[in-house]
Length: 525
Image 1 (spheres, rainbow, N blue to C red):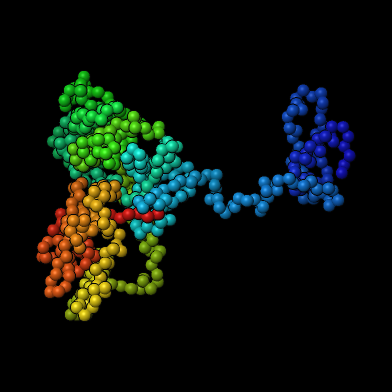
Image 2 (image 1 turned 135 degrees about the vertical axis):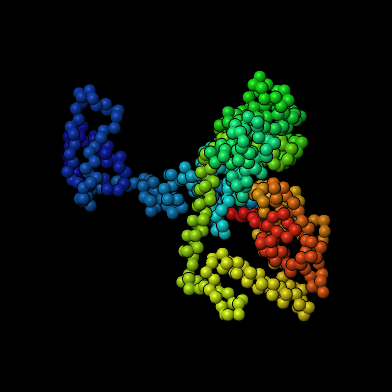
């Protein structure tokens, strides 16, 4: 080792001790700046910088130099570290772990980036949970003690939403279906009835209310809404009926009946700092006069019961109108962009998956029609080919079911329990749970499920949503010539099993007001 006199020795020894185990100096030659004791610019209490060129050299000290043992090898050697590098996500410093629940109360943890939106997280969950379809998924913000639910908008950043939660509160994210998120763009007249549109919104004379609503929605805004709502008085159990106005500038209430005069209008809330939530089990939690309850709450601070403005409507259509207007006034054009993105993205994904999953043997197959006398013909129209495939599948099922229902077969071989494997069958849930599940996944026309009847043995109930209401149809067994069928119209139309009944009404309305479109499913993560 080199002999250095004076303060050089002190500096060299300090540098050796600071580098604890491993190769200390890569070259036998050191270039050190002389220390000036009388220099006013150097303070001995500060660390002294040593040139880094010693780390870049190729040569190392000879083996005759004594090595300094490393007292903490686990902190310097990744190979001996107890933390497995493979257990951390790529770029772990930029990722955050969130927990998302399914409707079966089981959770899944996913790593997300700081700017991940609700739409992006839903797409990740669709991939990891291997969901059959990629449309109409949503993240639900659930405040369980207060009974509050809110569907996150597609553009909202998930981590920013979680930052507003209380650490002690029971708040979670739920991954579920929501078919009604943008339904007011498709059927605006149903969501905004003419009786609830303010007279001041009719600025274009000679225009019908439906045309006015469609023009406003295309421009990213909403007509002014007015109507009576029950409001819960603060610190009391009493509810009071008040006339409210919802405008772009905020929410107002009238202190004198339904008067719109400025001197009678009282400012209630600003829409920019609020979120609108639906209230579950509001009769029990808040003593609401009806089940159609919603509330407005601050979106920046943790939710407290005293900060909630709880409102109750007369029916589901009125509640949906108010909550939809809140969203449109707050987010405006952004909602329309989200709707357009939701319309285009799933189709492109499905088309890409369809082409990727096609095998070479499938590419060589064509649809044929052998119904004519002149021989078979190739079906060129894709829609006609899909209809032919569906009809052939139903005919096959009809033949198989008829074969299994012959008297020489025992009852165990009959396909009477095939419906229990279908996602639209929910077993013995109650009527109230059915309505709650359909409301949670969106009150859109054609949403349905099938369940066991709780009042009639060996019967089933088809629950269907139509015009924001849930209707229930009894499915009864029917015996004909010793064979068992199911019917909903006293035997006029017979079905071999519930699967055939559902498949028929997905194409034909029958006695229903609308065809079956969206099965109400429970998501398991």
